[in-house]
Length: 197
Image (cartoon, rainbow, N blue to C red; front, side, top):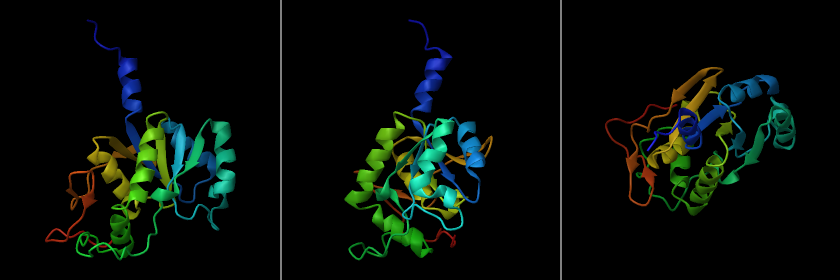
């Protein structure tokens, strides 16, 4: 039996890895150049608020049309959006690793069925098109994208953070993550508590 050709292997890897990206203050042309440098075909919007006063070029109602000339599609998955409120039904010690309240709240939220539905949709579209999860924060370590990345990594899916044209950083599981059967991830407190982001 002949070994698989390089192009076939590359195509298989392309469909099993995900990227994260922050739009920051880039122009659409700069953003598209960044996406194209990683051969991104689909932007998955994981913002809770899919508009920006400072950067209206990233408002949901115009972004899809702006990316179309670059052959990049757009999809919003609100179930993965950040800025979650405190989850009263979740024990506060369960994700005490996070000093930052917004990360703590989001980690609690990921234990919900709604988050899992959004995650399953993300994985589903990501097996069809090479995609990047987009939020506004430029750097991944200050964004809930890092927690979504943990859930993908838990499923043995490669994740890369797009930093700049030609510069990606491979994602690694967050230091305090505890993996559970059934796919849940918690971040209990302890001696290796993460400093506030």
